Image (cartoon, rainbow, N blue to C red):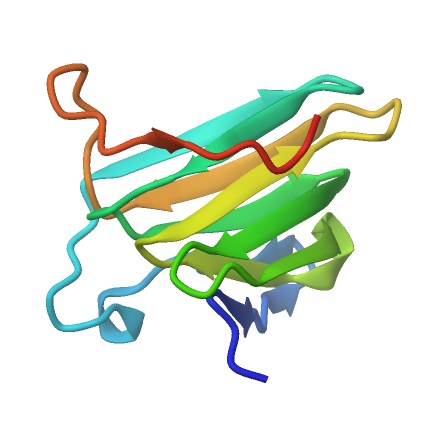
Length: 135
């Protein structure tokens, strides 16, 4: 099945100090991609993030703590998928342009997600288009 998104398996480096996972590396980016923004998302129980898509922006997400209920919709085909990703999965979720996405925390524990964006957010050019996937 062709997906509108990509799940990239991480192989953390592990030693006596703990683990190190690279969420993004220049060698893994597409030729035209550059990282413009990195941020952390904290989401309380029952809250939803996203419910939008971008026409120009590619984003990468990795769950650092908790489990995210994720809905993803290919805006060109209309195909929607629902997946769950936890911190233990060691996965980076790549969301290309024209792919709606939403994250929900259905657990008591706060959901923490690291995000890497190929376009810096600007109030004058948000490149954000509402598409309600999760309530």
